[in-house]
Length: 99
Image 1 (cartoon, rainbow, N blue to C red):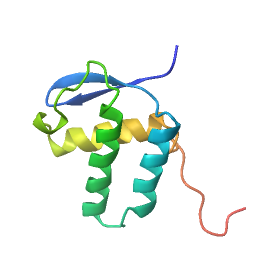
Image 2 (cartoon, helix red, strand yellow):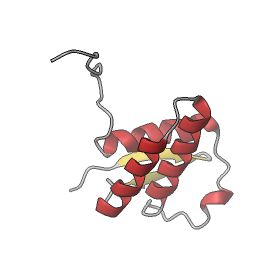
Image 3 (cartoon, helix red, strand yellow):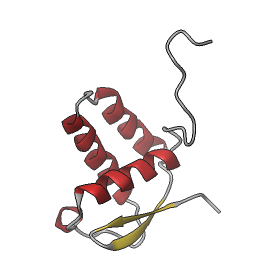
Image 4 (cartoon, one colour):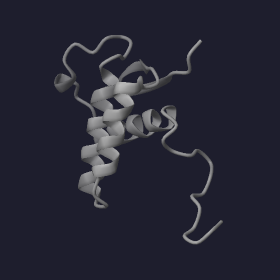
């Protein structure tokens, strides 16, 4: 059975699946173009969430109609990025100049 993550948006729970190759390519494009500011981070969180929502269970009929909080969006986006293996969990990133 494939690993999944459960996210909450607008008080409803959705199961999301790992990204397929095409989705992963789209997500990494957003992450690569992300600015260092918080506005860029929020924009990327929405983009990542929208891509994951395409195959969510239960099916999301109208993504734009979900009344989610920013906290839900950020939390869901973080869970999705971890599920995709794009974020190390429980580890500190290596410091510059470290072998």
